[in-house]
Structure formats: structure tokens, C-alpha cells
Image (cartoon, rainbow, N blue to C red):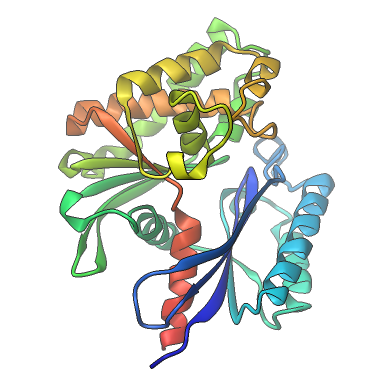
Length: 326
């Protein structure tokens, strides 16, 4: 019988960097969480305007990654995969970032380095993670990963344990990017909100070739969706067990988004389930979610959203286990 192993997955996005240490048996489905961590580092701060990763952002990333590498080593992780997404793809000085990750990870895991994955690979990992706890019979699924710099929309199904993608698109809209580009006031003005909605609506035109209409269930993953679920449920604090697998009506989701868009950063921070590092950009994310509610209702006739704590991070961990199986 093959022994269980521990694997490490790191997802470094525009707004946050996250770690998952999980245990599983190579060649067999299923992972058990050992440690799951998240830090807001705002790696993509200013990238949309300057085209470069700032020194402060790189320093924040180094600090978090150093801690994550030490944690993985202490927990006996055997293999690591680190994926970097939107902010690093767009940065002129991305070599500086990759040099830093090679140095920090290599101290414990020789040869490990961050990788920028293709849009197709990102879609596959996002989908695999997002639907990992759902029944294949509930599909096909449209999985939406709303990040800081980009939003992925993936349609697919599960057949005999295998992921079959039907279509995917990555859009250059995310909570940090929309906020930095358009939402300059606190709270945003009506003009800024209208401009942000126009930017998002224009971006969604690019999803015309993604067969959203075939989806039987909409799944939202990553921090904006999980925070919105907590607020929709009126949770006094962030509760992963109540958020994972929660089903929220689109009407309720629109209400929560409207309130966030109209609120100041201080008002958002006062909400018990709100991570303080997310408060200044979640208004931009809420505008994206409102547009997605309209788009998915119109194209697929769906009236509710399933929110999953599992996402690309889980897909990354699953891919490490598959790699170890040979």
C-alpha cells in the first residue's frame, strides 16, 4: 500500500499569497488539509499604472514566502509547487520576483521556483479545485475565480473523476485592478461606479465563446466570493465551515454588493467577517460580482451561487500529488 505524503501548494496572486499543506496518497483521489494560510501582500500594487512590481510589494512577498517555506519544511513537505498569476505576468521586473522566490524556496526545497502558468493550465487547476467537493451529477459547472488582477471564468464537467473543460477565459478585471484604475474616491462616486461597471461590462463581452449557458451550477471561489458569502449570511466573524459550500441567492448577493460599493473603507473594515486588508478593494470586486450575477442569470438561467473555499490552491496541491504518482 502506498504511503501518504505531504505536499505544499503556494498561490501568489495580485492581492494575496496563500499556502496549503495537504496530505494524500499519490495516485488516489482526495486530500486532507494540514495547514491553510493566507496573507494580504498586495503584490500587484501599482502594477497597472507603472508596469513594475514595487520594492515594498516584493519585500512583503519575501517575508511571507520565507515563513511559508519554513512551515512546509517543519511539516515534512516532500514536494512543492508555487504558482504566480496576474501581477507577475504583467510586470517588467518579473525576473527580480522569480530570483527572489528561487532563493527563498531553494533554501529548503532545492530547485523549487515560482512558475507563471498558461491560461489553460490556470483554468484546469481552478476548475479542479473549485469543484473538488461537489458531485459530478450537479454539473456542468461554471467556476469563477475573482482575483486582484484578473477574473477566470471556466465551464466544465467531471467525468469518471477526470476534468473536462468546455471553455474558459481569463479577463483583466479584478478587485485591485478596478479599484486602482477607476474607484479613487472613498466611498466611490456615482460617476466612478458607472465607469467601473462599463469597464466590467466591456470585459465580459470576451466571454461570448465560453459556453456559460450549458452550466447547471455556478461556483464562486477565492477571497471576494468567500467574504461576500460571510456578509450575505450575516456572520459576525469569518467562519470557513459555514462559508464552504454555502448557497446564496443572486438577489441576496446583489444586495450585499450594493451595500459594499456604497460604503467607505472604514465602514467595510467594521464588518466582522471582513479581512482588513481586503476592505479597500472589495468594492471593485463587488462591482465585478454584480455584473457576473447578471451575465450568468441571463445566459444560464441560474438564480443562486455556490461558494467554495476550495480553488486553484487545491488544484495546485492535487497536481503535485499527481506528479508524485508518476
